[in-house]
Amino acid sequence: MKPPASQPYIGIKPPGPKTRALLRSTGDPIDPFPPIWGIPARNQEGPWIEDVDGNIYLDFVSGKCVANLGHRHPTVISAVKEQIDHVVLGATENRFTLAEKLADLVPGRFPKKVFFGSSGSDAVDGALKLARWSTGKPNILCVSGAYHGQTYGALSVSSTWNWMVRGFHPLPGVFHLPPPYCYRCPFKLNYPSCGLQCLRYLTETMFTTFCPPEDIAAVIIEPIFGDMGWVIPPNEYFLELKKLSETYGFLFIADEVQTAFGRTGKWLAMNHLGLVPDIVCLGKPIASGFPLSAMVAREDLTIARGLHFQQSYTLEANAPACAAALATLRVIEEERLLQNCTKLGKHLLEKLNELQKKHSTIGDVRGRGLLATIEIIKDAETREPGIQAAKTICRLALENGLYTMFMGAFETASIRIAPPLNSTPAIIDLGVGILDKALSQAEKILFRNP
Ligand code: PMP
Image (cartoon, rainbow, N blue to C red; front, side, top):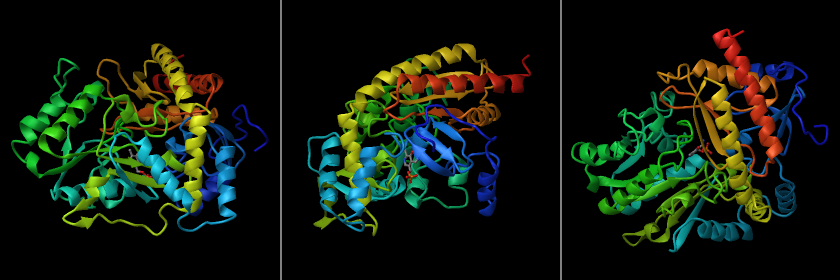
């Protein structure tokens, strides 16, 4: 990439010929572009991605909430270079330092144990195994429309799209709660007059019929429902669910794979609630792009019936990834990124609220810190989801040099906005400006506006 990028550059309409050839070589579809796994890149730096055809995009999703420090932060890169000059495989001192730091970072003044892995999905599987193993109970509660990953345990508690489970026979003993998706309440009620009907369904219907509370090992929950559409329920929802877990004796697992490490302006999104989970799953941004995950649990849960809970993976806590993780934690502190995220998050939300006034396709604006979304609709009255519109907006944004993507359970479409935590107001304004342009262009096409 010609140094240093400060503006997007689109030399050829994406996907360009080299990108197309690569996708064709593996049979990947060319439309929609980019595929779910991202843009084939030849350079990445800060908030910028250069594709193999030389186009430069502003990455407004931080590589799916992984590159929270921007791509290839110099402190992370030099820590990894230093590490691979000495050890690549297996444990170093860093593994132990990192375990201590993660245990400190996760709320709860009790001894904790950290189990490492290499993907968010394996951290979730570990949490589900530990919950069943330590309580001796069979059942797991999760939320319908949630996303927890694609290994067997993780997919069994996920339901963002039906292809995640179709034909796979998910694990038995998993029960789905109705989603606390206030913009699209499954009970057609409004908060707070609803009295949290979505939780009352658990106690009044599920507990008394097919899901007796004594058989529940744990509930697994995202503090912000990511792939469901970055749905942010009222704080009271989580606090009440936590109380229920204490009353009925099941564990509370927080899946913070996407929300931890400053994304919402605090180390963990659960910190906004003052809530102390029994088990926390970490992944994605933990090592700024190097494969690493962790499951952090109350230590007492890991000893039962005179036995110790065991789990290990050959490539867990890989040395360069641990070096990257420690450097990531250091940068978040030294560069005061929690503070920057909180400040910029407010600015971003203001900008998105302004956009909503201009664009009828924006049904709802949600955000906490630098994790924000605009939900795309076809019709303001009916709130009919605008999937086709969201596709068009993302394509046009890309053609104007902005990389973003949309997601949503229940066939809804919310556009992800998650710039790096070390962004500046200028970067936010640039990204929102391109989004504004893409929305106008899309509305022109879709509604044939003059
Ligand atoms: N949990 C959550 C909340 C996630 O967002 C994801 C990934 N989108 C996962 C788990 C799975 O992580 P991975 O893709 O690294 O397995």
